[in-house]
Image 1 (cartoon, rainbow, N blue to C red):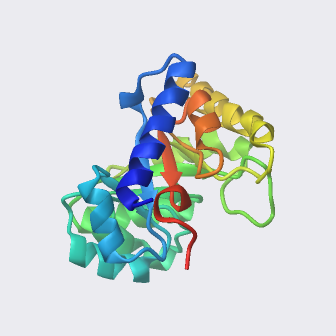
Image 2: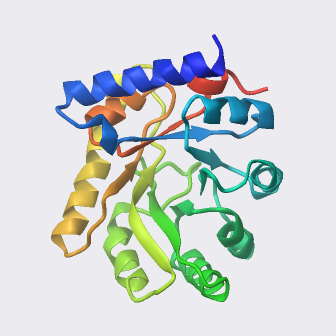
Length: 225
C-alpha cells in the first residue's frame, strides 16, 4: 500500500463513519501526523490531497516546514513548552495543545510581536491520566475566560488524547465527554467549533461522536521507524 492508497482508505473510512452519524464529511478535517516521517512521504501525502499536517517536536518540524513551505497548514500537536512559544508562532498555523494560562499568555505575546493571530485548541486530559498533558475539565471555563481578552490567540475548540483501549468502543464515552464539554462552553457564550480527537486506531468512533479533526499518522505512513 502506498501513501496515496492509505490516504484514500482513511478518507473512505471517515466518510463511512460520517454517514453513520448523519454528518457531512466536509466538516471533518484530516490532520496527517508526520512525526518521524520523511519529507518525500509528506510530499506523497500532499499529492494525494492532504492539506493539514501535525508535528510533535519543534526541532523536527522546522526543517520539514522549511522544505515543504506554507502551501499547506501546519499544526503543533505535541506538548509545547512556554520557552518555545515564539518558535511555534513562527512555524505553525495552529497550536492544538494549549494547556495552561501561562502558555496562552506567551503565545498571545509572541503572536502580537509577529503581527499575526495564532489559532489554538485547549487540550483536555479527559481521562485524568498522570502520564498525559492537558487541563482538567473544571479548569476549562476559567481558562477560556482568561483567554477571551487576548487579541492574538484565538481558541477554536478542544483537543484530547483519551486512554488507550484495544476495544475501541471503550473510548467512545471519552469522545462524547469532550463534545459535551465543548457544547457546555458554547452554552456559556463561547463559539468553539473544533473537536480534535481520534487517532489511527479509533478515529471512526471519534467521527461518530463529533470529531472535526482526526489526527492520523500510522494509518497513513505506516509504523514509525
